[in-house]
Image (cartoon, rainbow, N blue to C red):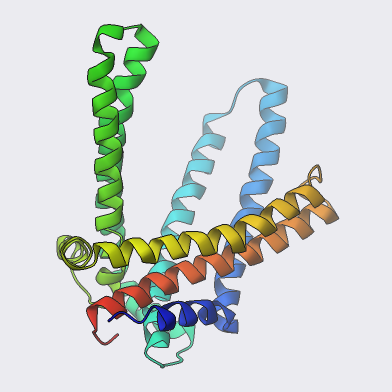
Length: 265
């Protein structure tokens, strides 16, 4: 039987480790400040010139790519470290750099495959319906609506069935398609209800712990400029909440994977 108590108890405790929290907090805060700074200057430039220079656009895209790669590398580190924590081994987060170096490329490819499938589902579901609406092709409306719902259903099943592939890739050192296969086998063949309950609980935790404080911050600092004292305070508090929830998510997914697999980290 899956020990949901241990899974979530450990997931709530994991982000409270100082080394674990501060690394992700520092990285996230740095990128948020960079994006906020870039956004302000882009808005000013576009307002005055009515155009966006190509060099500036490429710089923003490069920053997004770098951020995505850094997030993936950190995900590999945290998956390995959280797995050790679940097994009672308190290792410093930096000790997981070696594992992250080895699993970074496979983890990136797993995410690419998952996103390609999701994008394909969105394309199949949304594009025909958009064309029907925009071009007034009402005679094809029923077909487009059917494709729309098929895309949603297939996309949801894809996300659900592949949800443990990243954890499998890092923890068990599996290849791209082996990770996806194992995730499918665990989720769809043995633990559909357990996995649904697990993600429902995770969603409720994120909604309560993240949603309520975020709304309160928005009300308090509604019109504060980003780089004012109030704006920085709001950003700082918001990042504390976001980092805690992201670490909780990483840890809970790893814990659930270990719980259903009954394997050693």
